[in-house]
Length: 288
Image (cartoon, rainbow, N blue to C red; front, side, top):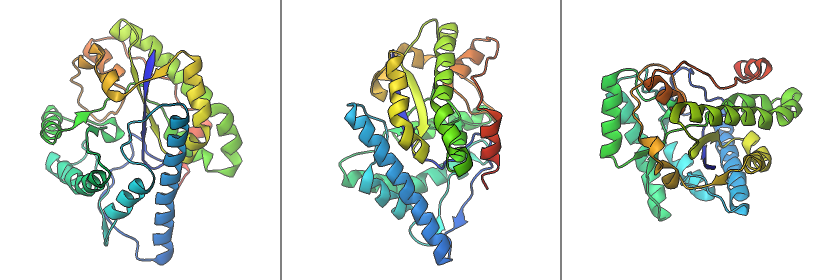
């Protein structure tokens, strides 16, 4: 079996039903500005720690940036008085959404070019691809015209909720005990569901976020996959499997695994992956 480590930078609180983020003014208060900068630095440190463990095991994630390059992009994207934050395709017009993509794209392209890299993959934020057939088709055309390869996700999970609980002193130890077993339960579910939906197992694509939780527990997380017989492959290698050429026409407010999308396309009964425990969800919802 094979899997792609699809680590991505996002706040610990990312959630598929979160209210859309709009344009917001950069904080004028020095303390708030410093807090925002420290949050960006924390993301960079978490990313670096995850990458170090992947390198130690001779693995790669699909994140194009690392270390100073990532920090340079984060700072450059926030330059000036306005920070452009992601809208959600399901709640804004296609034009508004693609305009935000373009605003965020140029500084990223500049930084990548300086490091001999280029943009290639696009992972739909919140796994939202469009609430209507017109929006979905329009976004797909826009991304293709910009030269992106869409990176689907098959191993979806609630690591963002565990990450929110992990920053709380009173629940950190419990998160350390229960997080990897929870992720393994979702992996086990999607392995079984793959056979039901596709007829066989195929290279999976894992979504995790670059946060302190995954930075601290990445050795245990990778060991779990290895114990289950996985090897890590590139995203290109995974996407070459015919499973990823299956049709999926879902449009709506949901954001979920491509295995669920293929299941819907084939008219199979719905089955959901294991949910995060109630105490984790409670900590997540109380994070602010």
